[in-house]
Image (cartoon, rainbow, N blue to C red):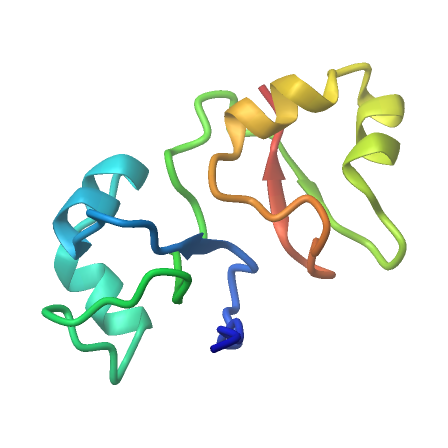
Length: 112
């Protein structure tokens, strides 16, 4: 069964893997189980499916620099890297859970 990503205003997703629970996901991304439930209505917290996509909050973990790149049409992590002088690896490390192949216009990318 192919899992479809739900519409998420943050553009950030978590793909459920074996052993994941809402608690472990919330802990990994620095949010609460209640927040995950609020932004994922209809999700059964006791029956997560491997491969299922969950929406994540706008900012996780908090961006220590407080500096963001707001994704514009056509932006890629490589282009953002070139424009900022920050490596793609550093951008990915500062933005866990981001889908580099599916950046959303208006999505905030934390710049370390």
